[in-house]
Amino acid sequence: MNSTQLVVKMILDRWYGSIKNFDAVLNAITDEQLQKEIAPTKNRGIYLLGHLIAVHDDMLILLDMGNKLYPELNKPFIDSPDKTVAEIPSATELRACWSNQCEVMKQKMDSLKTEEWFEKHTAVSAEDFRKEPHRNKLNIIITRISHLQYHTGQLALLK
Amino acid sequence: MNSTQLVVKMILDRWYGSIKNFDAVLNAITDEQLQKEIAPTKNRGIYLLGHLIAVHDDMLILLDMGNKLYPELNKPFIDSPDKTVAEIPSATELRACWSNQCEVMKQKMDSLKTEEWFEKHTAVSAEDFRKEPHRNKLNIIITRISHLQYHTGQLALLK
Image (cartoon, rainbow over all chains, first blue to last red; front, top):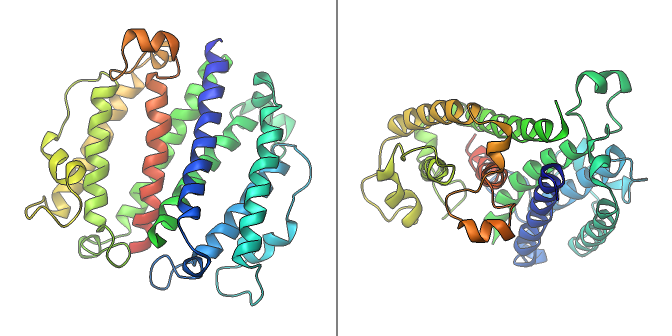
């Protein structure tokens, strides 16, 4: 394994490790607790869960891995702040979406070769990518690990 | 720039980006707000700040970059849970430590060459490192980005 292969593995390991940490937090929280705000006047746990699924769905597009699994989650969990959309899916439904999405993404991500991680993601033009080669698929994983960890720290407050 | 140099740059950029995000949150919070719990019965903001300085100080050791800057912060902010140590530094003092530490670490980190990031960190033996080459200095940065983001999401609740 050369150093490029090694560092791709390190980053993917951190992604899967972050998913595992999130799962541990989520599994320690009941559906009733998920309905609560993480702190007074802040987002509810269920909103954070829906938000993460919607953001990870967008990763499928950015990574050129096919269509979103749950495009209907974009409006309530990305376009809208919490507590402004009357009808959102139940905690049971969102838990099932999350778990299915993690499995689908793992399958797709595991099939990518090292060099494919350094290809451009779909939101950057070929011209810009020539000047900014860091705007690749691997960088999507790096930034989304940060995003996932940020919200895991918040969800953990409901335990 | 080859792909290994590129990915090291991507990871260091994410580290500095995370520090910048944390600074923006910290600067938006007053010393009085820092004394508050991030959520009822949870850690205070000031504890999270002290905790991050203590953990980053430990990175200096792991990265073989010299001594800790603030070894006295280990006991109140790593060994002890919040609200169990009577005397802790003031918010003003901790803000100054944080800012100085970020500067010192940047200077040391910027001087490392790409291949040096793939050397073993100090907490792994040479023998184990031969079998587990991912236990290198770069992986310390990857895991500490996650840790920093986790607590940034929590501190942001005090805004």
